[in-house]
Length: 309
Image 1 (tube, rainbow, N blue to C red):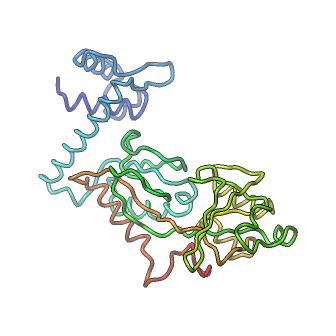
Image 2 (cartoon, rainbow, N blue to C red; image 1 turned 60 degrees about the vertical axis):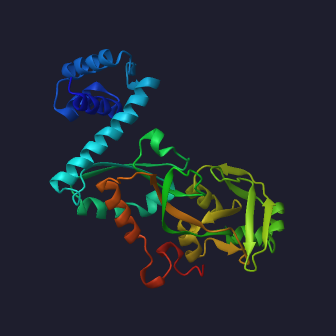
Image 3 (spheres, one colour; image 1 turned 30 degrees about the horizontal axis):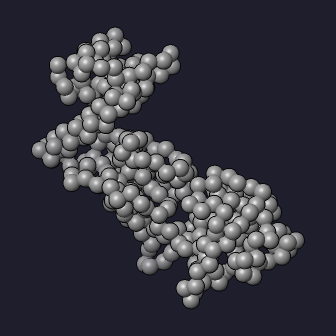
C-alpha cells in the first residue's frame, strides 16, 4: 500500500464528505476510491468513517488519523517546495475562519489580492463569530477580535478594533443621553451574544479609571450587523466596533455617547498554529494581510475615518 496516496485519498473523502466528490477530485472512479478506503481501514484494523445516506463523517479514530495525515501531507508538500524551489509560489488550499461582519466588509479585497498574486491558490473561507479550535477543525489560520488565551497559537496583529457606545439620535431624544456609564442601567441595551461579558460592559476613561456596569435589554443577538440595524431603528444603546457602526455615525443615523468613557480597544489579529516550519501558503497570506491592513502614513484604518478615535 502506498501510504501517502492512501492518506491523501482519505483526507479528500473527509474534506468533501462524499466518495463521489473525492473521486472527481482525484480523477478516479467512485468504485476505486471505495476499494482503496476499504483497504486502508483493513490495514489500520478499524473503521475510519461513519456512513449515512447523505454524508461520510469520521469516527473518533478516523478524526485522529485525519489530523495526523493532514500534518504529514503538508510536511511532505513543504519539503517538496523547498527542494524544487517553489516556496515563493504557494499552491493548494488555504482554509481560513473569520468573524462574520469583519470578513464580509473587509476580506474580499484582501482575498482578491492574494489570489491574483498566487493564482495556484484556492481559499476556503468560513465566516462566523464563535470561537473555533483551529487544529481540531482543520483551519490554517483565523482572524479574531478577542482576547487570545490559547498559548499554542501564534498571534499577529493586523489592526486595532475601536469600540464605541452609541444610539440613534431619535432614541436619545426620546429617552435621554447617558452622562455616566451607570446611567446605562436605566436604558434598553442591545446585547451581543458572543461577547466575553454579554451583560457586563467595561469602561475606562482618559485618566485610566475603570468601571463596569451591568446592563439589560430587549435584544440579545449573535450578529453585530443586526444589532447595528436595530440601533439605527431606535431600539436601544449598543456597544459596537467602529467597523460595523462607523458609516452610520458618519451619516448621522447613530451617535457616539459617553465619549469620556470608552470600552478597551481590541486587536484584530491573525492566529495560526505554532509550527517550526510555516507553510509557504500561510506565510504568504500573513505577509499580504499585514501589509493590506497597515495604516498609511500613521493614519487610522479606513473604518475609523472621521470618527476622532
